[in-house]
Image (cartoon, rainbow, N blue to C red):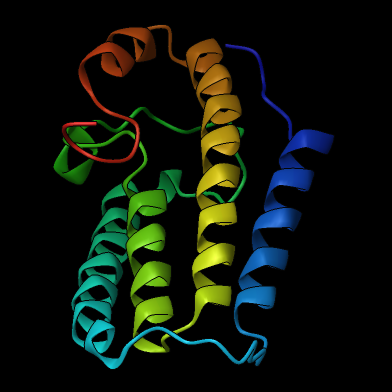
Length: 152
């Protein structure tokens, strides 16, 4: 099997992702906030998303990398939460950030979360092209398992 190396796209996706994480946590108050009743769903989404991220990271174990290109010695893992979504870590991050946005009643943070979802769509598309090169059976997995959310 040929060695897969990180390239400019790998570094760019990760840099933009962490830049969005940083921008998300800036204290920007545009003066318009969501109604207070969004706080409770925010806590629920945050807890649910954090749980998904933690479990997914533990399940991926030594295969974990922030970069879209898989590690040279990576093995395709399709068990655990990965049987319900191809990218459960991204799913968990989306729920976590949406939860924080709602809890903090912030339209600005919801906008950053939407941008992050768009980034994850493009990053996962590129990541899957890399996974197909490394694991030809990824094509079958992709046909039967949704990208981020079961049922979508």
